[in-house]
Length: 175
Image 1 (spheres, helix red, strand yellow):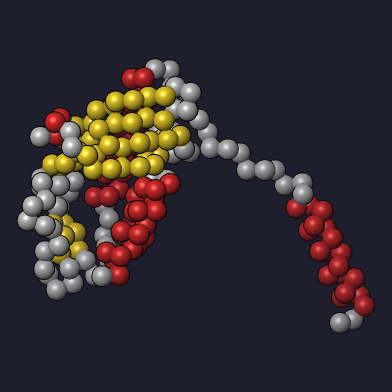
Image 2 (cartoon, rainbow, N blue to C red; image 1 turned 45 degrees about the horizontal axis):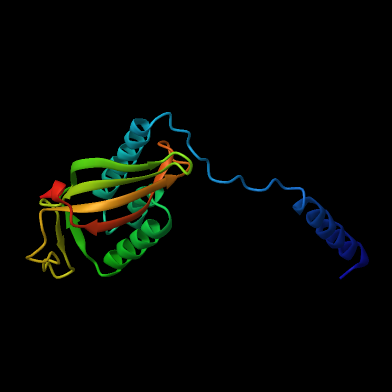
């Protein structure tokens, strides 16, 4: 290298090193301040409904359509969605029909952390899933409606919440 080029590269490296320490640190996730439990439950329901809308828009042949689902999830829920949708895409599966929410029941709100736990009755009666050969991937014993316990946590979404976890449970509300 020529001396002038070495000096320029060294100066650029020094400037980069000096400015790196001055960059603002990322802010922590916002914690929404809900005025009431009812407001928190309403935000949680809006979040879950937006997630289901995004899920109903997924085209397994087009991974770009997965982004809407990912935008409403975080943590374990996001990791599970990424793994499941990617695998279904790779296997050439197709989904038709729409998921509906028969019931959204806010059960727990922690004002300090702003997390919400709710029970959702998810109606998948219209959902059909077939593999690349056209064979159904839906078990004959799959119920049309099943209960989920959903945990939502603060995030930067328009509702202020994201789905962190969703587990199938037994709940009489969904029978």
